Image (cartoon, rainbow, N blue to C red; front, top):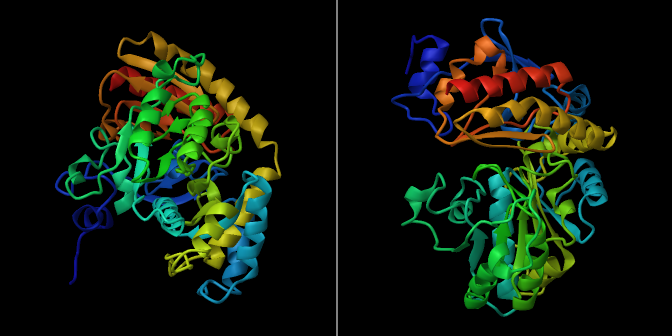
Length: 431
């Protein structure tokens, strides 16, 4: 098939973009190059990537240490299967992950993307329960307003009513949902279990404990489900409830890992650790798709002691050497600098510069946590309408739902961050 269409017209007629209507694709920009926090469009316009390219480009585009590591690896070993073979990049990355992640998480399973890491975590939980003689435990509990990815099982633990996957309800496994934790990070923790949400959680887990393999949630920060920040004490006490009932605890840290919240992991806000953790997005500094699922010895050896003994998952590109060296380099960049101070500076500046939005009549809330800034509107905000202002503002923002938000790269300068905040305030006034 030949097609004489210009590149952008070809894109609109043949290439399907995320969450778009192919009959009304909306404005799309052609990116020719990226460096640091900037995207260069085909007409030469430079715009700040205030989204960190969907939250993963934490150290900026084309970071020299990461790209050099990938170039060097490309000349030696771009890929080799991980079945029966291993390589230095996988081992070196594993050593680095054990150095920075919660102490109890000692087993690492490399996979392709964040959604797949959730699938792996859920399979681990089911296979562990089966190995423990609890074959009936194949369902999951979670909190409403959560989001865990677009693959099949991950969709089943996304919010069934307000989430983007609600139309698949009839096809997905039915899971166990409780209200999202009602106490925000900014509030004092009430001891009353009915007020703090734990009574509802305990009832759900107790009533379903013969069916529930694990409780899965995003710790402290719910991302795509509304950029909601909740109190970590909910997680501390949820851990005890799970332990009492023999239910595993899974933390989905795909969006929150590697310093985004001001802690290295959102788990660090808690006094407990999960049985399984999902990591992705910022793992490679956004330079190549990669993720991992980590678990503790109890789960890993439990699976190993059951029937069939082997964990039933094995992606073709598992532990891809290019991705492993990118991840190791990105983690070296992160831990080799005072990232904590930089994220704190970003948070302080956003608190100050987004504050005027609180006076706007259509704004419901303004909140900041680490390098996450959110203006929540009282109405739905159009991403297409925001895109129409991108070139004029010099800032690429992509709102979703009621939220105008940014997750800027950690290398964003104060002047660049001010431009992002100005752009967010403009969208809050005009959209």
